[in-house]
Length: 314
Image (cartoon, rainbow, N blue to C red; front, side, top):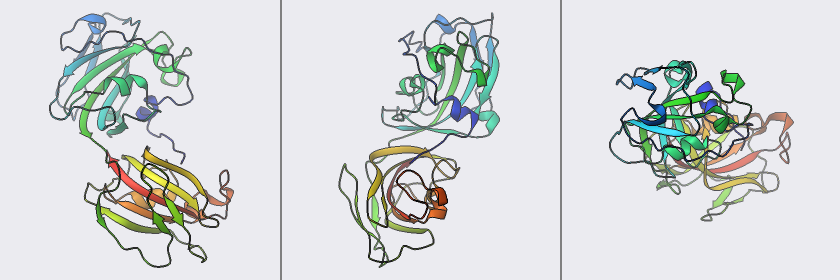
């Protein structure tokens, strides 16, 4: 299931097509004191609803390795390696102290799954252990984050120091599988057999596929409702109505933005508004899938069938 990132800040935190250089361990910087590589950086403002002010003096800041400073410790559950976080973040060019982009400017929070291999290792590494209410300052040479060419679309040269101010809003542990009350499906739909740790078995009926999107809950979860623009984690199996062939699956959990065009329209329509813990049987006609052009082995006339477990949302 292909996906894309849309907001500038979200794009800034993903690997994308740029090769990463392996970052050194650098200084842990896990202290509130203004010492070490980030001593020239002052972060002001305590209201999480307002964008912090970052001052670099003297300029330019020079960084030779990745580093971190904990500005505010936060409290509550510390993020584990497989957790999901809701954050606000600001990107600053340490050479001149100018803000490149931020979630405060975009008017949003950003959901992160720490198992997401598309996220920058700088983030997935240093956010482990962070607590709700924490504010972190992360820094590294741009070339160590985005590769030897730098990040021209953000105005960052290879040797420019890049700074991230990160506020942690929520930390949640995603489910391993759907949890909730079982729902008896309507007759005439594909049947599902779950196989723990593997793709589900989906058996198609000997009938013509529906022409409209079908969203049949199999389990109703008791978690929070999924909202448009959130990052969700799902386990899923996708198969073709015409022959039952499984074309894609992920049994351990797949993170993606939802409701913003990062996945096929049928997923956006069906999953937004559902509750975490739910298991859905989705019958997705071509118009709500890959359209007349199809994709790979999926023809433009194919109806897709998915079983989707909603494991988390931030």
